[in-house]
Image (cartoon, rainbow, N blue to C red; front, side, top):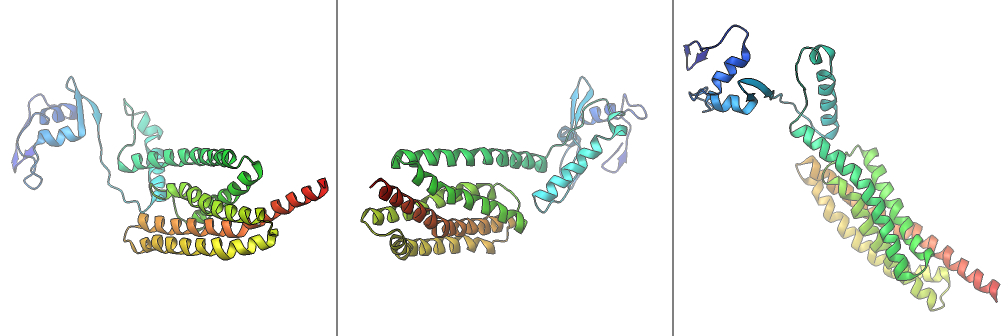
Length: 280
C-alpha cells in the first residue's frame, strides 16, 4: 500500500484478496489525500459496505454528461445492456443495478408522464360533470370541453414536432391547457348564450361575442403569452422549453376558443331553432 509517499504492508492480506485490503482500509484514519482531505476510512465508507468483513455492496461511480432527457434515456439503456451481458452476470456473485441522479430523474419523469395521462383524463371528465351540473344540459358541457381537449392534443403534438422533451416543468402543460382553455371557452359560451336568449340570431350573436368577449380574450392571451415567452431568454434549456410550450398553450387555447367553439355554438343554436320551429 502506498500512503503519504511511503510504501507499507497490511496484515491479513494476500495477493488478490481485495476484500481484506479494503476492509483494513475502512478502519484506517490516516489521510488518503492532502488535496481532498479525506481519510481512507471516509473514502472506503463512501463506496463499500461490509458485512462480517466481507463486501456486501460496492458503489462504482461513472461520470457521464447528458444534455436532455433523451440523452439520459440512451445512457441508461446502454449501461443496462452492459450489466446484463453474460460475461458479467456469470462472473459476479451478486446483483448489479444502476443508480444515481440520471436514473432517479428518469424514474421520476416516467412516473410523471404516466400520472399525467391519467390526471388529464380525470380532469376533463370532472370538468365535464361540473359543467353539466352548472348548466344542466349535455350539449353546452360537451361543446366547452371539446376545444379544450383538442388544444391539449395540439400542445403535445407541437412538443413532438419541435423536439421538446418532457421534464418536471413541461409535464404541467396539459393541466395549464385545461385551466386556460376552459376559462376562455366559458367566457365565449356564456356571452353567446346570453345574446341568443335575448333573441339575437346565432350569427349576429357570434359577431357581437367576437367583437367584445373575443377581443378581450385576445388581449389577455397576448399579454400572457408574451410574459411566458420572456423565459426563452433564460440560460437554462428546461426553463426555455417551459416558456415556449406555455406560450403555445395559451395560443392554442385561444385559437380553439375563437375558432372551433363559435362554430359549435352556432350549430347548436341553429339546431335548437330548428327543433322549436318543427314543434310549432
